[in-house]
Image 1: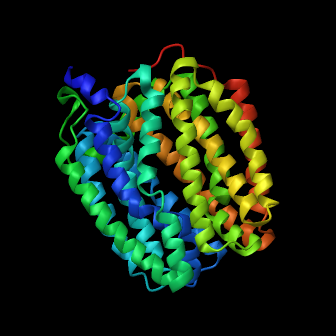
Image 2: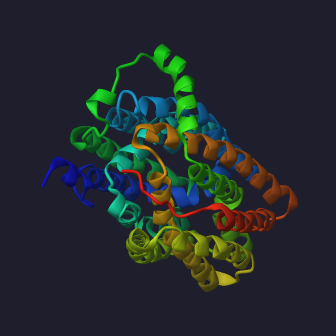
Image 3: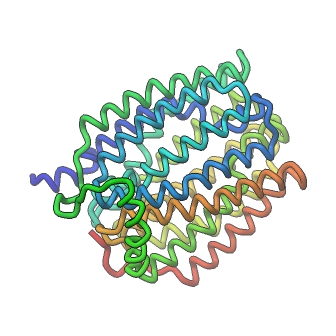
Length: 410
């Protein structure tokens, strides 16, 4: 088997390394992600502050993502991935020892800086390690396996929260993330292989990188096929809609429905299992029968689940509705990731991923701020109503404009 074939194997080479290291990171990271909004509240913030913190991170990420896209396509993928991973790992200590919610603004800003620089290279090294004939399946494995490492983590930290309090348990969780992410970063440094061909790599200084970043992006913009712009348009709508209410699922479940932290953690575990069960066969079928057969139905059904969540009563109903959301997301997730790469030329992927990251960051920033204001000043249901309407509009837009790729980029 050639080196290229090995790198293209679902569990070999870079894909295998990224799955393993992301799984280790997720083992601890799954303890903090589902409960971050509650951590902000415990540190003295309010619902608008939750949106402000999320918005700040998304906004600051914009410029680093542009620069990161240039660096991914010039100095290489590996160097950007492992170096920024180490810095992101160190940043977990700021979260762990934050004395007040305003301190989280510093932590989220640094997260956005390091994550923005890493993001395009992170996405590109995974995309480079897939092949057109099994791309959706490769993405499914990538999206399925790492979350399994953290399958029980949300429930375990939820139990600790109910016993020792949210603040203390979250500090422990962030310390665990620091340890796990340090191990993952070291493995990436040791085991990843560069995927950008040597002839396409060129050393660059910071001044030159900043000068050439925008000129190189002009070339990339001109090279984008029309259908990639359509796909980006669908992503723009979805990103804004999800950012409106993403931070408030857990607060709504706790304040309005009455769920405990342990119950929310258990639901997080269940939806990971559901996502695992749906994603792999959906991805295999997407590679064989086409992307749109899986993207469009989920886009039309997802707004219904938002409406049902607002009217849920008790643990069982929330679990079923969140499970349906996870199933729909898993139905279209690998196909959506794959179709984006299908339309993306390899030599521009770092910058294309940067464009996705920048646009998503700007929209998420606006959506998070708007969602926080709606949640606190209008009603708890307002962000979910607005998101449901936008998701419906995105589904109609995709139906009318998005087409199956005739040829898939390598």
